[in-house]
Length: 233
Image (cartoon, rainbow, N blue to C red; front, side):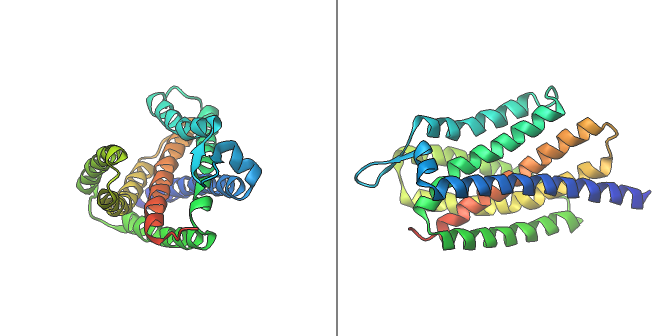
């Protein structure tokens, strides 16, 4: 029985990471294509004579569409068909890549690659810890989620105050929060996999949502680390 449960968990985790890597691949590809092509980049961002970057109408749509997609998936996840869930997930990751194409304008390509490697290493270590630890991380997850809400409020405040010190604090807390959430989410996903779900469509949708949570952990960790390791172009 133990071996069967372990096999189910391993299979589920493998599927989750496969979908996560697929989304990361789409995001990276879209970001690279739009970030290195002047024609594609101009569809989303405009640059005036002073070199100041601003978003086009399509840019605003690309920026806010992912939030709408995530909210829609969250509130109607059980009602969505398996195909719709997959399509929205892939669309979300592609739109995120398009909106993140600006990092190729702000940072050097070498520093982006270096930060990605550092993020992958940190993510991998925390994922292994979350999967192998016997300690229940539920309390830690609750604390990190509260810290995340605090970060969101701080970001909104800093949108008006433009405080460099507050931005630095937010970046430090962001790295800590999403590093910890990686371990917490992996353990939570592992526990879900051990439960075993008979309905194939339900399992696919749960897999997609689990992959989305890890995708967001990785992406946010990367963006916060980029503020420290990214070199301005």
